[in-house]
Image 1 (cartoon, rainbow, N blue to C red):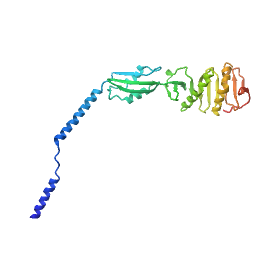
Image 2 (cartoon, one colour):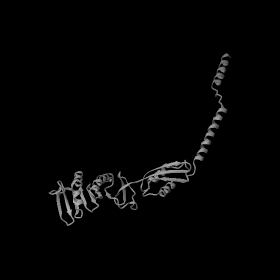
Image 3 (cartoon, rainbow, N blue to C red):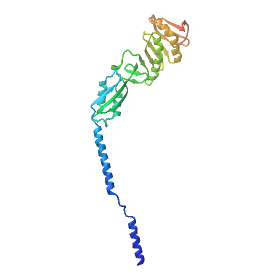
Image 4 (cartoon, rainbow, N blue to C red):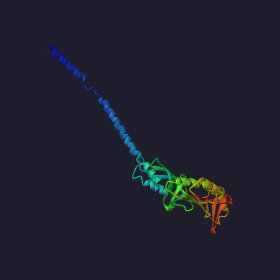
Length: 267
């Protein structure tokens, strides 16, 4: 009997020990109400800030683009979005797809506006007839409508844009100093170089010893070409000790420096 009493007492003590604690329901309710209130205020604030976009302010120095074209591209990406929910990354991406756009930034402008800053591409040359290329060798504006005819014509296999542009920029300054201008520079699939001056004289460099041949052209041949451009049809720098001059009369003369000499064209 005594043992049974002790067992019953242990069960009662164990049951009282594992009872759930008393929760502060009033405090929890107040916290939940506070959280709900903050959430409601956040939603209301978001709705207030997400104002409809009524104006697009475009800034930049434009020669080939217009602010209206830029604004039209921006509004095409809005799809009814407000100032908070507007997909700025998509808007910037659409602007980068416009011909002549090199860089673009888009920022929210309170109230109810977007501020757009556009940097226009600076073309240094035409590329492969229909494209344009900048000083880094980036090709853009692949449409003949955007190709200024006064730009020099560069050409080369795909992937050689930066190499050809760098060669053009290195040559152009020296050629301008001589009183002429580089009208075209070509690199063919075999790796052979050829240029044409604005006086109509073409110069062939081939694909071997290119640096030496360009240096010899600038140091010796260019001066002679500028002096007698009306008589010269082409100059062939593919000789070990000099270059060949093709006259418009049909005759050809080999020259070494400023003197007649012999050599063999070797590509």
